[in-house]
Image (cartoon, rainbow over all chains, first blue to last red; front, side, top):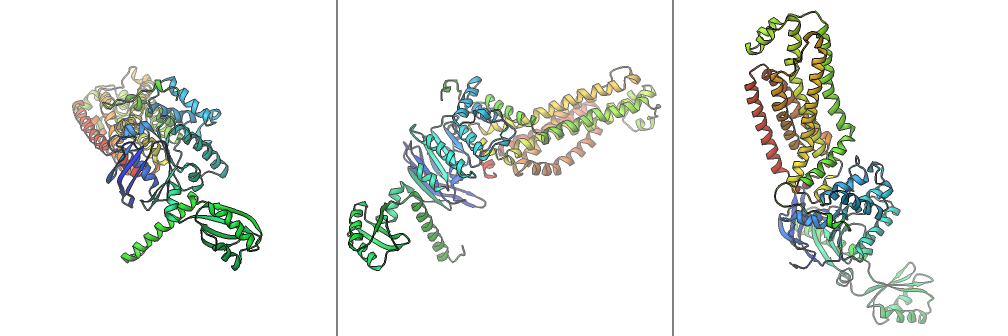
Length: 327
Length: 281
């Protein structure tokens, strides 16, 4: 394992009576990076976070988190991490201030310093005016803000954000995503963002890890993973109508075009790289077409995720079929 | 964060009383605002330790003297003789207030500790606050001690305050007949100081086990009812006997209850791990 990494795991495995939740997961995340931990519900994201924070013990495998073993030094790990759980986890019988104060005291703040720290965070998250209100009446977005504030109480070196926008309406999702963006920029904090909302992951993550039925099926930078998945990049040619046969043939004849097919707005292509784009415009004009737009489309994190997930699911079904078991 | 210099990291040795205090403070604040927890804690002791003795004492002190000699003859001489030497007008009051109401008193620590333990352990799951707590830097043993204290200390406090009120009511409503303070008796003292805290410990130990399996406070109370209610009836039966024997026997039976409570609490602590708790959320 890489001792300098913020997180390094080796063969991490954990089962429950219902089945294997995390299966032989090995990866290494450099300090200061944002990792998007992706996968459908039940893929093992939350269990992975719990393992890395020393809340769960593994059946097999090992891990180092901030240079510590979370399974024997869980308390020390948790002193240096912050966690936003999927549910905000606020006690509705307490005020926002009281909810945070209890956590601040557990993180070692004593006396008036605990109160000052809590108020600074409530102000930062624009909840200071609700500090003395019971959290019972708070909206989901407000609860997330309080929970986010709480996750920062220890000024953690490593932040786990588990489904931070789950259950939020679009406006609150945008607000919380914006808050997370501020947490991930500039201060060298390592962040693990467990989510199935790909837009926020795509906007924030340096690397992505894709879990499928507890197994890590992909880990790396989105562009590197895309390069492994597909040759070249996508391109969209916008015409006055769907490209006909001669137009598709003209596009395919351009050096560097790997594939071309008609689309609703013209033609969808796969090309070697963006240097092919100028030749495409010339080919459209030469073929008598009316060119309205031309754009290269490097695969998004979303494209990469769906492709990986699709292939993982196909592999899973193939494995079941080869073993003669019904899925 | 600007106040880092004012942070203290807990020592790995011994209990972290500051962390324990933080959880206790938080939970007691929450309990204070929870009608579902607070009402049973106040209503049941008020009924049993204030209203019931007040009504009985009021009636007994105004009724014609009742002959309880035949009943007292069936009791051990050590208990019956001190009552038989009293004036006939005092015998019923001393028998009821000094002895027969005592079993009811054991229900209070049992019930209060059970209600609070269900809230402290299963309630965290129900409110979905447990996972957040598990991700905070508090050691398993400190969290366990905090949760035990939150459930145990108020149970004993409510019992003792309840008894104080009971003593005031019993002596007050009977003053016109007794003209002296007659509660607490020696056996009451053993009950309050020795047996009642042990009974609270037993209730707590049972509810910690039950709460580990229950998903909600209601589940825990229902499951606990299957165990706790029989215990209550058993306690009532035993307490009746306890108070009618020698105080030394009462002390011995109290010791047995302490051992049972200790076994339940210690074995509960071994099962109280983050891994187990997180696996069941």
